[in-house]
Length: 170
Image (cartoon, rainbow, N blue to C red; front, side, top):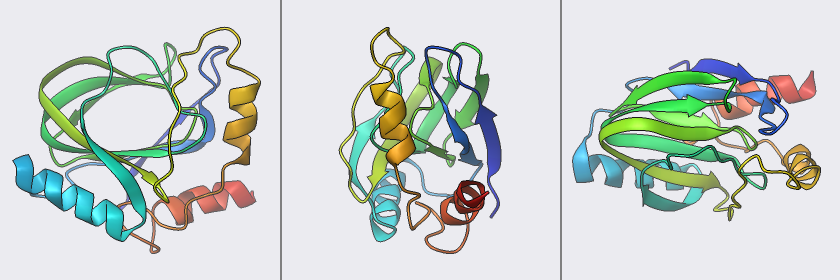
C-alpha cells in the first residue's frame, strides 16, 4: 500500500516540515469501537504508542517534539493541513494520516469524526499554534527528530522509514 504524499512549506508561522505528510486512503476495514481497537493494536505493534481517542482541534496547531499518526475509525472531516497556505483534505473512516512534526493541522468541520492518535516510541507531545515566540525553539526541536524505525501501519517495510528515510538521506 502506497500513501499519498503532501509537502507543505514554512508559511512564516507554521514551520511545517521538509518531510511529507502521508495519507493512506481506506487503509483498514474495521469501524467504530472495533476500528479504534484495531488501530491502537496496529500502532502499538509498530511502536507508535501513547495513543488516545478523540478528534482534531478546530484551530491550527502543530507538534515540535514528535511526529503523529491519526487513524480515522468513524465519520469524516475536512482537515486544513499545513497552515493557512496548506491544503484542505477530506478524510473518512478507514484513512490513516502520518503527520511529521511541525505540520499544522486543523478541523474545518466534521460529521461523527473519531480518531485514534499515537506517537513514535510512545513520545510525549507539545502544542504550538504558530504564535510569536515559538520559533526558533520549535524549529530546533523539529530538526533534531529522528526518522521513526517503523511506519504506524506498515511497520519496517515501507511508508515512513522508506519515504522519509530517502528524503532525510538526500
